[in-house]
Amino acid sequence: MKRAVLFFLLFCFAVGTAHATTYYVTPEGSNSNDGLSWGAAWKTLTYAATTAASGDTIYVGNGTYNAALGETFPIQINGRYFIAQTTGLATVDSGTAASDTINLGNNTTIEGLVVKNGNTSSYTAVNVAGSGAVVKSCEVVCTGSFVYGIYVRGANAKLLNNRITSSGFRTIFVSNIDGAHNV
Image (cartoon, rainbow, N blue to C red; front, side, top):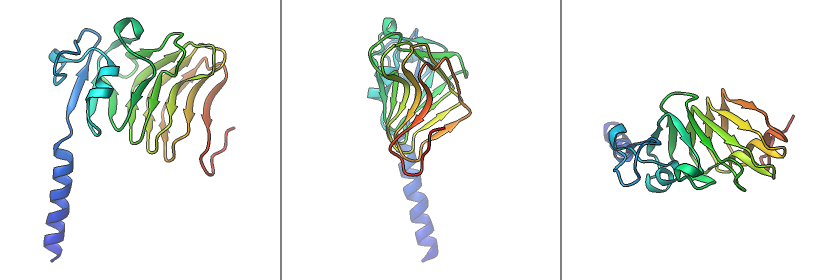
């Protein structure tokens, strides 16, 4: 009986992970590509965030991702893993757009990205709205006077080894989470 239960659990795990796909994005890519290799990479993070399925991994090539490239802000990421090809060399820059730069939903990870927001209103570079979101080894740069660096509203969020500079209002702000305190 124990063997049958163990086999069943291993089978369920294998089926659950077998469908995760790895995609690639570069500023030189095309959203008409399949995104399955660096040579056939997609062009925008916006497209990757809406096309990839929950649980998929998206490798982000070196370069700058902005409105001129075709990005639409905020970039809404739900249940996906966005990982920079080289930490610190993939920049997501919303410029002075009247929006957040990146919004993270449930079970989402961004790693190694540089995230910039230069708006002077009440917006956020990284808005952690979902539960279980992870921001890891990112650099957050806010040049606006009333911009949050990272705003955490989702439960069980993890902020690991990040650097936040030039935040005009609040560097990290945590809201609506039991037991959370801003210092």
